[in-house]
Length: 171
Image (cartoon, rainbow, N blue to C red; front, side, top):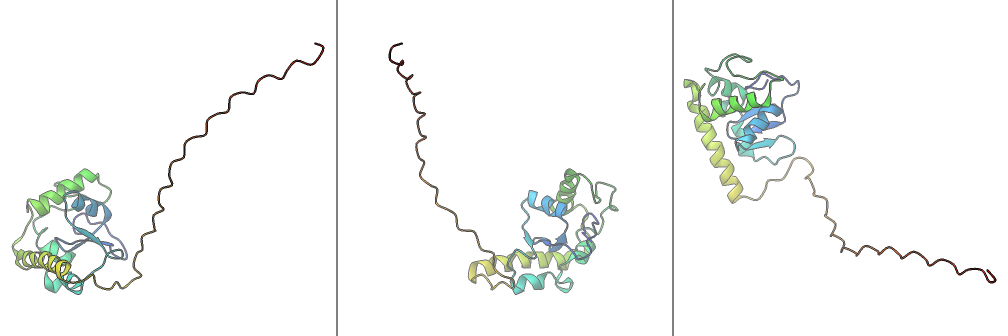
């Protein structure tokens, strides 16, 4: 269940907001990205062991931890500006800003999550700066080689119309 809007997906969501360690639906992902929150794909991104560990509830990550902290005082889904599945994207964006940037619904249980968020951000930056990319558990994505642009050829000129045939003899 998406912590922001309550969207339910049987097998979970494929996007994680790294800054707040939450698994989010596509509209919430778009809303986080609109205000420059880093979002990673579960399947299309590389993950370090430290990043995976930070997502565990015991380390302050995950949707339950977000509900206890960032959303502790949030209105019910579908009221008070909190989006519900199918709402307009503008409602999602406004809620994400209010919830995470303005901390309007933040609760007291947030000490661990706030610390975990700072640690996750620092860990991600440290891993990126000091270690080579970790081996991926799935086949790496390969970019298609780009074809070199063919040199532009001048357009062929249209042939002038053929002159009329000469008149037949004796005409």
